View 1 (cartoon, rainbow, N blue to C red):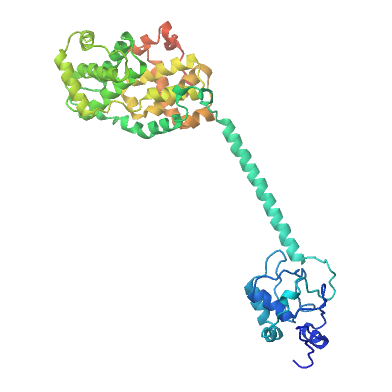
View 2 (cartoon, rainbow, N blue to C red; view 1 turned 60 degrees about the vertical axis):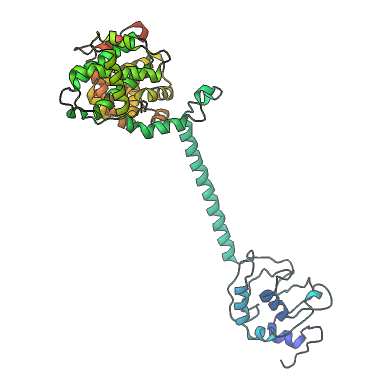
Length: 432
């Protein structure tokens, strides 16, 4: 370039300074030497960032390197190689100077470029950058508020659901660590314990009325032998599952099926099992010992020795705990669900739905119309609307419990041992 007075140290003279920067000036801040712009530009493009201060004012046509406007880069973002390349392409003077080599870069580590009109320490940012940062701060603030609101809502939902196992954490028999997994397993497998609600259509010699008579009688036998509650529910489950699979059971052998099912349930649930002779005696010696044992073998093979699946009883205990029930609610709930065991039409409902509906009906009977709270809904998995149909049928069974021939459940719960639960007035308002 003509008129250039570049010396051996690579410092640009006055003429070059006037033509290259067009009104700008280079001011050395430390040391006697000054670096060429080509060295600075080369440093940006091809080498690690040089440890010098960076200008905060955007390069424009009035105070920048060239007349063409260069896109402004926010000062808080690092200058990329792509942008540096675009900057070099836009100025032929820079491209020409990039061919020059200089060893003076390492000799002036503290030099910085100062544009005309800029004071040392002037870090004012463009207006649109300030607006953008203000918008981003506002967005962050609003997102923080929304997160706090959502957390508050979650806390309110959690506060509505009580931890019913917190009081049993020190009791190893309650297996608090596994109780949720256990009942999730029950809910997934309860359908296997259900039978088709019309399975009696495949039995040519017996009907649902005979089934009701058998179960009503077994409830009295269960009460006389003072067996565990689980035994009764398992007995009825075994009877229904066997009759649903093994067709053509003669009516004279139906009682034998019931007696044998109770024997199997006792062997599974009881500590002290009634002997076969006791069961023969209670059935008025209608069957021999050999007949009982043969039927036991037939039922075990038909059910593939799968004697235990979730019954309404296992759900009753869990759901009563969730409902924080007292003794009256508990006794009335078991009274209602035992009425359902006798009725063939109640086979259309799953064990968990029967248990939840019985508790809901008992609560409504004793306390008036009471909302199904969040804790009950959470642990049972049923809303109030899903229970209403089954609950109305239970109220109907409660109305006629002491009438007709099948009164075994009513007599059982009309004693002081069961708190005279059968005398409770039915919740007729649920039928409206």
